[in-house]
Image 1 (cartoon, one colour):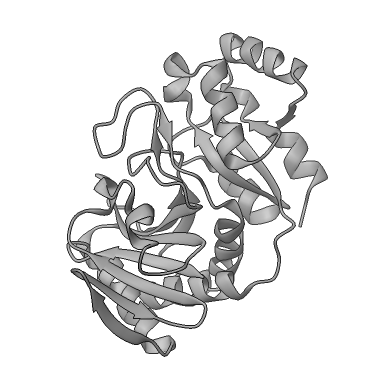
Image 2 (cartoon, one colour; image 1 turned 30 degrees about the horizontal axis):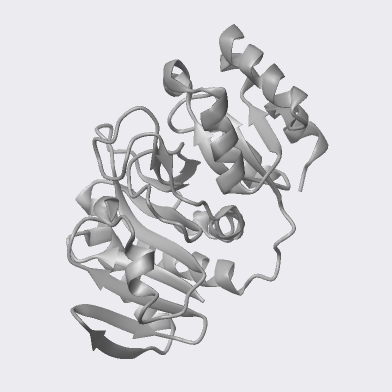
Length: 276
């Protein structure tokens, strides 16, 4: 069972919710302040506060509903106002300015993310002014032990309310949760910018998908122990690096990790050797 979580304060999340409700038959019920829409393979819950502050939500909700994956349906906000669909995992590195705890990582859901991205890719021609991009790990909640990720529409209220955009996301979510494909190659990624162009190319065009991803701006705070923690929660022994942005300090750290038996791949190797 996949649980879609939306905030009553989030216009894009409510847009996605409305489209899911139009596509699937749900039974509605309220339990101790929580409002559920229950379906066969997917359920929806609305919460009062922002999603980024929903730490430990899965522990609270499992008293009322059995689910194994969380989809946070959300808006994306950026100053440049780009029209995008984006996915990312939540967690924090050096600070916790927007939910969660610092140096803490939610458990990612790379398989659902991958199947969603491929479903979304098939529908992008219906909104040609939009593009898809991955984002790196950022903001809360970090205290989620159920596999999860954020599925977002950006970046202004015009896009958040766009009914076609909401429908595309809803359809792609349903395609992803109904997909039987789960044999994707999973990795942690290191390097690149916040919008992760090489990781975006890889998830769209190869057999790889990602759990946690760390941009170059996190390098001053990355430690070997933290990268090993990311590998553990992502449940992989593979790291993909954006070789053009990887510094000598990070390379030395990755060499130590490689000596522990982990696999380090360059993004160009992945794009060349693991094409869909």
